[in-house]
Image 1 (tube, protein in one colour):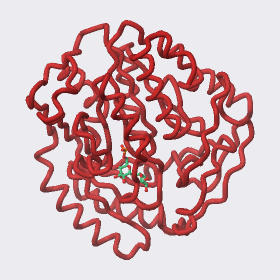
Image 2 (image 1 turned 180 degrees about the vertical axis):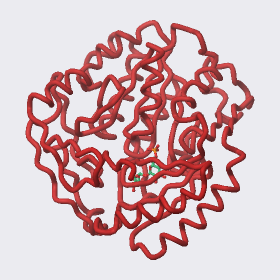
Image 3 (image 1 turned 45 degrees about the horizontal axis):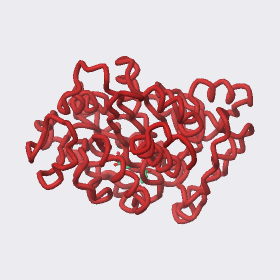
Image 4 (image 1 turned 90 degrees about the vertical axis):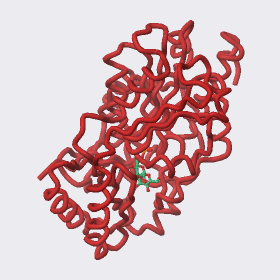
Length: 366
Ligand SMILES: O=P(O)(O)OC[C@H]1O[C@H](O[C@H]2O[C@H](CO)[C@@H](O)[C@H](O)[C@H]2O)[C@H](O)[C@@H](O)[C@@H]1O
């Protein structure tokens, strides 16, 4: 059976958690206290995530019944390798100095907190203003597992680029928003569109209906149609049923060799077997924006999900820009920096705007 690893404590839903100020390089509290897993979704929805109270690593190859404690030394080591992008903002700004910043933002868990109901993963007005502010100064893209229409309904900003369905559906700003196009190649309604998995639409639609029918007997499950990919949510499924759900989904996918299965945050993702991911979308967008082969570009990609790792790896390989993982617990990642939660992402975006407006003076004060 395929690996189910990767349920970290920060898979818990969040209610507005107070921002914990970044202190120096060390940002994670030293002791773990695995929060009791709430399988009742109503309780979970009201549960304030306290996972930040301790670092938890998951046991590879199993459902996450047992969390493995992470020692203080391990946390220190991890934080040294992946420091807070807020605490180390001056280093980020120094690396970006004189370069053209391009911003890539994942949606769920990055711009909006993780909540029990995927249809209610709203971003705050303050976050929207922060993203709007960034997009005024830097080319900005949302890169999400959601279908474009859904993520646009949440974000509601026309001036952005959108790469939905894990990067398989790419759309540029509309003509009306062309004033935000900065120095990009695509101007005046010359919108970028790209759908590398278009041939898979019929099979995705077929599997969506099959999965809906198979999941009907599993209370709390939810099948989400993300156009070029599907999500089977089990956040609200009783933990005792997770194995059954997994088996049923795998049994369906076995009949479709053109599709593959991966795991996100309490969600099984089904997508076409094509050589395209969020990393490819990042590269495609940089090229469309006229940045290919230029060494004066500084892409910043912020995301919380495993699928964001593909983009982090692309940046590592390019040796340009930075990846920032949003997490409260140590995880294996190709990102160079971390932020703990969406409120810190908002703070980081505001700071980026300040250095654009004020130059080095933007580094001083809040
Ligand atoms: O790439 P992303 O924008 O991060 O999208 C990844 C998946 O996010 C959504 O699911 C996750 O967020 C939900 C709302 O907070 C939560 O209920 C769920 O448990 C998470 O897995 C979205 O619903 C999926 O379709 C995306 O693939």
